[in-house]
Length: 407
Ligand SMILES: [Zn+2]
Image (cartoon, rainbow, N blue to C red; front, side):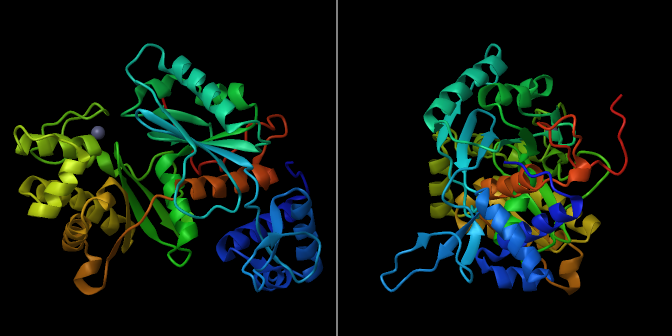
């Protein structure tokens, strides 16, 4: 069910759900107090959200340690519904697509239920992808999803629900992915930039850190910025594109059309390419690289690549005025000396480290938690001012402050 109440009522609902995401579990009274809302107002919202299955009431573990879910008793604790999958998440990767039904109460590391691979250079990838989604839909079953969150790489205009440019997945630029997904599930579809989802998920898991740059290392290298607890708002639908900073002397071609981009050195493929070049004859597997580093330490080529990544990251910190970096993805799977080296190199380049401290932490990917946060805000309690009544299936995103001209 999607609510269409008054704007004020909707803002109160949003505030209450946001608070519950932060707190995890809370009573009606605790919610009302922490939000500065009257108890009857908070209670009324809670009752409505219980009826629609957005919230559930929780009986805390009894003496036997058993936990159960029930409704209707005052003084009971509340949480976002974890008993049912209400949203569907899809992560579109370079080759692999992962799908998961998500409960609204999710806050932990990613767990995908179904995945399949697609050759991005094969014939009509869009058509093949649609077929594979149908198979995934049969496996996941006929759940009553409120919407689909589709996480994608590249430069995404979330307001228009489309991909403008995708260095490593060019076929998605000319494809209406949202329509494909809607043909399979027939519910609203939101396209979300993948690093933005990661940053929101991390923010939910670590609510104390309201300002950070998240950099994810995987098939590409991308970033996202949280400032004052919110994703950075900027005029163009592009930010955090840290992987496409050129590295002097690097001759590798990048999917974006440039030569020498940082991600050609530190993406999964870039790392393995360097590894096999350095170890002539060695198998260039990820496990082999992990073993090599644990046995012999960080090789010179890797130190140089990490230093190059750190230059871009430190530059971003200096420009944005941030002192916290969150690293997710493949680098965190390598021995901890790798992130420690990167962290030291970031310190070396950042001005704040000269007289203060710069924090660099490795964290798990919490993309699904970020997607749920977006789903709650835009599908379950959308700001009614942002939604055009004529297009109920297309949630309108926050309009960029300045419209860009793509011509
Ligand atoms: Zn590039």
